[in-house]
Structures are given as C-alpha cells and as structure tokens.
Image (cartoon, rainbow, N blue to C red):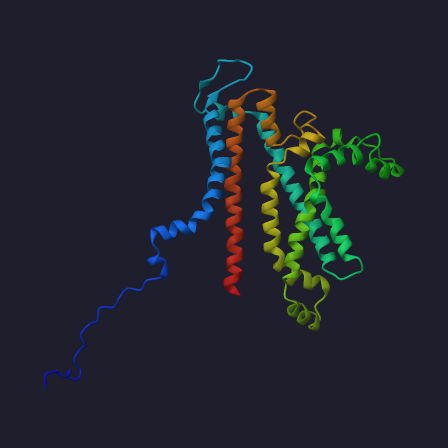
Length: 319
C-alpha cells in the first residue's frame, strides 16, 4: 500500500499549531486612528487648557519676577521653592487648608449619611424634601458665600445671632471664628453632594439580605453597623476623595466671606497664592507655591483613588 500505517505506540509527528491571536492584533494602524480620532479634540483641549499653562507656571517659578519692578526679571533656579518652604505663613496657610478640607468633608459626609438614611424611607412629600435638600449644591458659590456673610453670620442683622439672642449669644462670627464660618458655609453647600452619592449606594443595596437579617432578629442599629455601613464604605470614600480634590481649589468662599483674615487665620493655599501674585506682585514665588500645591494634590489624590479603585475591583471579584 502506498500509504504507510502508523505503528502502534509510535509517537505522532508534532503539529505546528498556529499561535492564538485576538481581533485586536489584526486591527490596522489606520483603523486604530479611526477609532481614537473622536477623542483627539478632547485630548487637545485638555492639553491646551491644563498642561501648557502648567508648563508656563513651571517656567515662571524659576524666575525672580516682581511686577512693580520692571526689568527685574531674572533666572533664579530653585530659590523661589526654597523661599516657599522657609515661609512660616505658607505652612500656616497649608494647615488652614488641611483643616478646611478635613472639617468640611467629615461634617458633610456625616450629615449626608443622615439625610440619605432619612430619604431612603418612604414618607409623604419625600420628593419635595429631596429637592429642597439638593438646592444648596445648585447655588452659585459666590452667591452662597454672600448669603452666609450678609444674611446668616452678620453681627448686626444675621439670622444666627437672632436665633441665639434668647440665650444671650451675640458674636461676630466672621471675625472671631473665620475659618469655622467658611467651613460651615462649605458644609452647607457640599452636604447635598454627599447625600446623593450615599443615597445611590443605599438604593443599590440588595433588600433580601436586610429582610433575612430582620427575620433572624437583628436590630436596626446592628443592621446598620453590620450590613449598611460596610456596603456604603466605597461610596463614602469616593465622595470624600472627590470632595477633597475640589475643596483644595476653594477660593470664592474665602475671598467673599473673610478675605483670608484676620491676618491669615482663614486663608487657604489658593487665596494665599492670589495674594502673593496680585497683591504682592511676586509672580515667581506665587508660581512656585502653585507648583507645590498641584504636585501635592496629585500625589494625595492618586494614592486615594488607587485605594478606592482597588476596593471596588476587589469587591467585584469577590462577588
């Protein structure tokens, strides 16, 4: 016979298997650019708006440039950064910024959690109450700061002093407690954001687990501690990080309510940079402060977001 039969027990000839390949390997370069093309305008806009100004800021931070002395511009290297880190007021303002962010985030998260738990229950007029609680987040920040300065915390005709007058309390809040006054206004404005985020987490919680726990005799407090709070942890962390990233840039509330005073007792980093640039006319040191603030914010935010994303992906894999 022309065809030879394979002997039993003989090793078959090895076959050349084709390597596995996905559809992505067969996408041509033109196809890849066609798919990425719609994203290019957004990428170009982001680079023009954020990265190019930051490069200019880096350049200005290496210059000794005071606007009241024309012709005094010169390259000084890292002298501006040395001056920033040896400035006692800069560290005081940094501490004010940390206190403002931490105080606002903690208070708004706690109040947002309370309001979210209340709105998660069915009652008459829940839609109206929800709309009223969301309203502060929709108010323009400048208008909200003016409202608190003139209508609530004014020492002459403020509603807070009027409510506390039967108890013998009459205080100039903006002068005696400037940082606390700014924090109170920011808490009023950021509580609705935290409330909506936590409320979304509550409504995504499976009800069958809660019903089974109630059948087993779990109390409301234990149900909240063992089931509800662990489920809401990711949403609370995400709201805290997003709120902190935005609150770093707070300028309007400080400017409109206290102007950073008395002294620098209520000034934060953006307002102090504004003072150094447009009141002290020292562009070099203001740019150096801006670079330090941006780098510090990026480092802290990146670490916090990485932890949060690991928490989300870890829970999804466990599920």
